[in-house]
Image 1 (cartoon, helix red, strand yellow):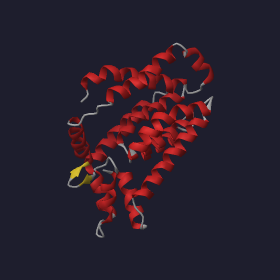
Image 2 (cartoon, rainbow, N blue to C red):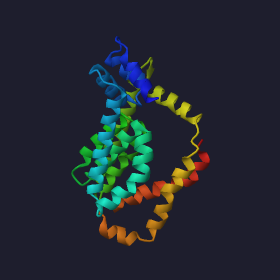
Image 3 (tube, rainbow, N blue to C red):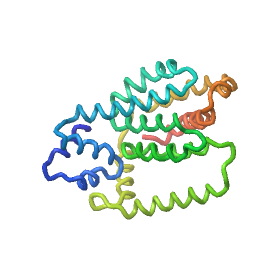
Length: 238
């Protein structure tokens, strides 16, 4: 369906406003990229090249930040690169920005992480669930951050109810996408969930060593917990 996005942008009267409206808030970045590429006289190959470049930069930055960069890259090649990045273009851009954000997630870089995750959400909104990892950067969280986060969430929700695309608000667009997603199925969903869970279980036996060699052990811990929670959550999925 990625070619469909590019074909939509080929229409001579197709404006940047139409691009944003068609995206319904979930693929805004991809639609804008397709629109820019088409206006430059290029096609889907150029779109794929830009997406691949963003993913590759994010992956390289993350791997370079690991204790054993080449091992991290080797682990990423079989599935994340060959299956995910080569098969799911929009998702790969979101993953690339997410990995880039993880590589700089340190005390004092919270706003940079936030900005990269927002960029990622323009390609696939589901990545927004990784925003709470910001709190893993500090030993102690100041009390005033909780009301600030609450006000931000309230403001974002209010903004999304005001912005309209294709005659409906972004919130209504996301609800429509959610309802559509509930009717879809993924034959490989169970397998992918266990692909994540198996190494997590193994890592528990080496947790003390992980804490010694990696400064990202808090992030690893919460992502591992998410992988474990995903197993019982399969019973509620489609």
